[in-house]
Length: 185
Image (cartoon, rainbow, N blue to C red; front, side, top):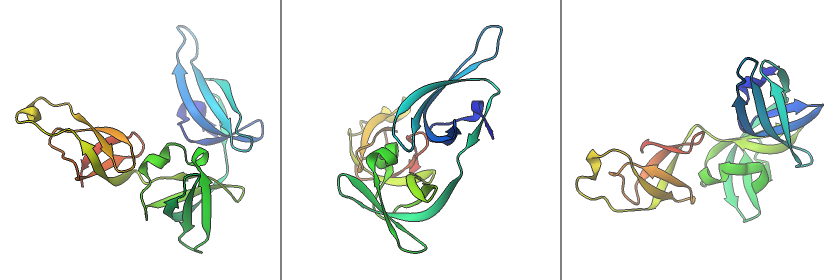
């Protein structure tokens, strides 16, 4: 059992005996009462999305998930193909199952495939991935003092903000949980 206050985007929970992926979580606090946790849940089986409100302190069952280490092979436009590291079996997942993880996938990236009842339902990325900067604005002398950053597009199409001293073609580490620049690789 997990407390609803600890729910995070991407978790899979059981509601009314059905597995649901948490799409969005918002916490609202009342003046003299308990808080409300508003969630948007997507059914793993049917794909239907519904809004569910929980009272603060409620508990829900976490889905019984299993994980298998795999390597990303390629994307053919409709499916993302992975190969299990232990038995070399290949799995094809749709963009809907991958969700925002598609922005971090590069060939040969090691991930974990998430299974629910022996059916793949998604992937779990490493906390940090190394990606190449495809394009960013040139640096001007004196920009490094002001702090902040400049927009950059990575090789996967992801847009992030990087420090002024980072140039096109450099490799950078990106946090897959927040989508933010960590450091140069």
